[in-house]
Length: 113
Image (cartoon, rainbow, N blue to C red; front, side, top):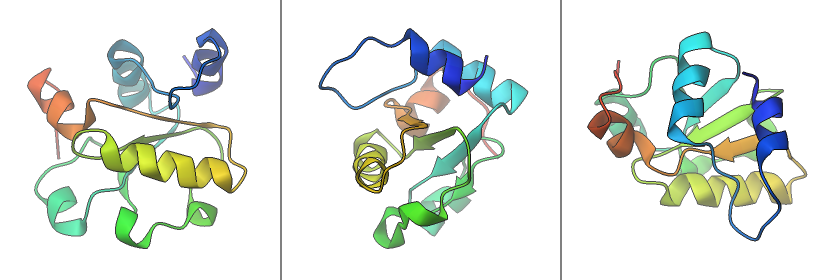
């Protein structure tokens, strides 16, 4: 399922746009959108979601995000929510963040590379 389809499923609200675990699993498996890990390089190097690109929050530039649908991830959701807010401020609307983060992904049995 493309992120665009997932976006259309969400109701309006004040919370940061997130992607549910089951949908994130599908995105990881079918590579239907870019995954951007905003943790620092040493954290990313210690294990990240397969296929994720590293763009640390400390030097995050929303203009350098991949084109198209993007899911942001960090360790526990805080930094990816900040990156999401920055990207939305720059006009991006085709993003979500995975609130459980890499820690939640691992705890749910998700593979890392």
